[in-house]
Image (cartoon, rainbow, N blue to C red; front, side, top):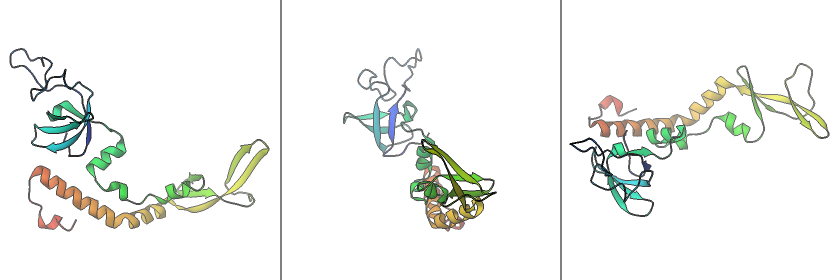
Length: 188
């Protein structure tokens, strides 16, 4: 796993193996002792020196040299993984369905998106029914649009940001692989 400066990590194991018996003897790969910095210690990466050396700033302020195999990412949610792979993704506009859902309940029926409307329910109309202490409230569902058109709107709104993210991703990949970027990829 590739680690980057600024990432929050946790020490999960020792990568040290004794040349004679194969045990870790309470030590880390870079000669630190597990007794001084225990497993499950949290820190932030302040420098990646090489493929085998990463410098951490531990939560107590000490700096500690570790091997990448001794670490794991602290936040393992899907969104965190995306942010790690595609920095800038959080700046993309949200899908209109989520924006509408902040104001009123949203329902997807078939390929159509509906929101709770006002007025009386007509025969044959989709309705929203809510039970209250005083009875049942029925409201019509108003068609907001179809998913395909809302998807197209989202892509149009995010197009320039997605291009910037793609370009940053290509540059990062180029650095990691250490290959020159081909001229045809520069316009990505």
